[in-house]
Structure formats: structure tokens, C-alpha cells
Amino acid sequence: MSSLPHGDLFALTAALIDIPSVSFEEQAITSVIEEELRALDHLTVDRIGDNLIARTDLGRERRLVLGGHTDTVPPDGNVGATIVGDRLSGIGATDMKGGIATMLELARTITEPAVDVTFVFYAREEVAVVHNGLREIEAAAPHLLDGDVALLGEPTLGAIEAGCQGTMRFEVTLVGVRSHTARPWMGRNAIHRLGPLMNIIDTYQPREPVVEGCTYREALQAVHAEGGVAGNVVPDRAMIRINHRFAPDRSAEEAEAFVRDLLEPALAEGDTLEVVDCSPAARPGLENPLLQSLVARSGLEVRAKLGWTDVAFFAARGVPASNFGPGDPTIAHTAGEFVERQWLDDTHAALVDLLTNGV
Image (cartoon, rainbow, N blue to C red; front, side, top):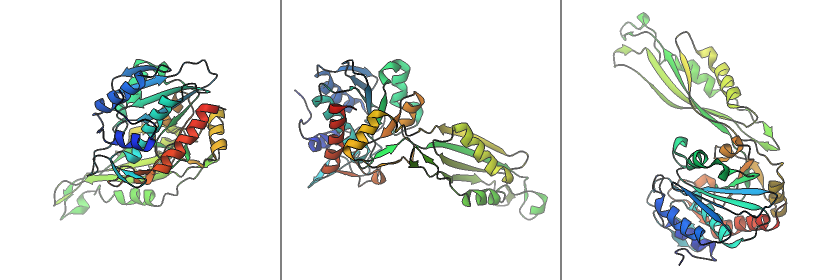
């Protein structure tokens, strides 16, 4: 017998919140969802590690991928579900047990969708991308992730957050010459050299390109700095780490070239600028007929995703992708994160319409 509520999306979300699933500890929630999915005759189910892929195979013209991660960040005094009226709080309520509950309810109730559907419940999204469950699935059975369009249930307050920004981190190391602080003219202070570099970053004017009708706002921020030898030594090295968020009208290579050109006036011989992490952007893909139907029939707001999500993973595989889920993204990962009953119902209703009616 099922261990999860049926017919009540709010109660189902609460039950999923009550199953702890901090990153790398998704075994229990994966097993519970697996039990539910394997009881459904209209789905084929594959488990790869702590990732589940459930698919219809009805020979429909189009295939929709619905994806969501089962893990949460570590709790902050908010273990377990708390219900006050129509508000549900607890770790993962926003990011993204509400989205997972919506996917599971759709999988259980829409037995003959107008489009074929792939439901992907994957692990370890909240940690480094090398651990991401989508990569594990791709390595083992990439065909299970194929589709015409993908929707990830990240919290968007029921709007379509189209595509996503790319993100990259640089480490810039400036060199100097050591000397005694009593005779600084004998050396060259590497930390002082950060001044011109920081000024470039501080006065940077972000681009706001419009891509497929969505306005993206880029960003360049110093996020870490270090240097120094001793209290009486002019330092000969200083390092600053910089994060750049770039719009999907630029490739990662173009974004890197832009940052290098921007910072070049503050660099000298011996300095280094190294890319230490990069995840590409994803275009909105709003020309896809399924996305157009979802937006038009349900009257959804469409806006750019100002951040990075796994839609970029699907876009890199040739599958247009957007974010669409219940929950307020501005309170994700906070101690007070919550989801409202109406947010769940509205998102669920829009997806029921899409799966029932297709294009």
C-alpha cells in the first residue's frame, strides 16, 4: 500500500518534506517515490543510483520532460513540515519538494497524456555539478533524457523563467615584490594593486540584452580575496576570485573573452587570470510549441531566469528548457521557506492542461 497521500497535493508535499533528503542522503525519498512509480502500469521506471526516470511510451508526436531534484540544502531549524492554514513550511518546501510533489501527482493521475512524458527525479543538485544526478543518468543511459522540451520544477512562483544565465568564476593573481614595511619603496605591494582591479569591477555597467523577448541582466562581482605574508612584510601576491553571470546571447568563450578584455588594463607581466569554473547559459527556447501552448492557455508570466539551473544541461543536449514550479525563489534555502496551497494548485492545473491537451 502507498505510504504517501493521494488526491491532496498539499498533504503530499508535506509528506515529502517529512522525508529528510539533504544532498547525498536521497536514498529514502528515492525509494518511497520508486515504490509509487513502479505501481503504475502506464509508466516504465528506471533507477540509476538515487535517480528515477519514469516514462510513458504511447507513440505521441512530442515528448515532454519534467524534471526535479529530490535533495535539499542542510536544514536550519526547519526539519519536518509545519502547516498553518494554507501555508506549508519546512526544509525544501520552496526548493523543491512542492515541485517534486507536483510531478509525482501528475505521474500518478495522467495515465493517457496527449504527449509522451518523462519524469526525472534526480539527486544532488544542491552541490557541485560533478555530483549532479543528471550527469549520472547521462553517463549510464542518455536516451532516457531525450525530449522535445524540458520543464524543471524550480520555484518560480508559477511563472515561466526562461532559459538561464551562464556562470563562471575567475581567479586573478597579482604579483609584487616583497620588502620590509619600513622600506616599502624597495618592494611592490600586490594587495595595493588590487585597487585598480576592484575599481574596474565596481564601475562595471552590466549588459541587459533581450533574448527572445526576455531581458537578462549580467553581473560581475568579487566574491573572495586573499593575500599577505606577515605584519611587517610588503606582500608579493594577492588573489581575488570573481563571479560573472552572462546572458544566453553569449557563449562561454565569448563571456570569458569579455572579462579578460575588461580586466586587462589592471594586469601586468607575471599576473594570471584563470577560469576555475564555468557553466554555460541556456537560451529561452520559447518558440517551442509546447511552451507556447502552456503560456498561452494558462496565461503565464514569462521572464528571464536570472541565475543558473539545470535547464542549461538540457539545452546543451539540444532540448529547449525552462523553469516552472511553485514556490518563491527569493526565500529558497532560508530557514523560513514555505509554499502556499494556491501556488501548488495553480502550477499543477497548468501542467494538467498541458499534459491533457498538448499543443
